[in-house]
Length: 178
Image (cartoon, rainbow, N blue to C red; front, side):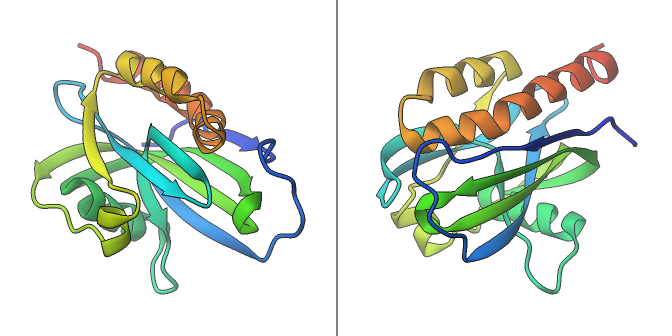
């Protein structure tokens, strides 16, 4: 399905920009099931970004031998343990993490769960970022993003993902609410 795309270019307003050493192409999913429950990852970190707990969309870097559609399906299987139907791309956000000198190229996909299975988290996702799955209504997720935007990293995630979530809400309300 073809969806209208949200396209944003954001700057990191939390850390001073010195130089950027690399770009990272990222595939991220707005994931929902037939009951319109949405699935996110909760991150609990204490690293160069500081101590923070927040939610964000599941996703990650596109590997050199992958296309975006293969990457989003792999990432959602790894982080959420779900197999999905990718309904379409709904957004693109260019943003920065100045503290690690990185430019992020985030591609957001609307994805419907086909089945649930086991997660395949990396060592860092388990021990460094303490990723866990969160199931929320879309309105609960929007409120959680707002409530969590109290740290530098959580504010960057909020600025990147809130416009995409609001766009997803419009698409869901129009196309998937019975």
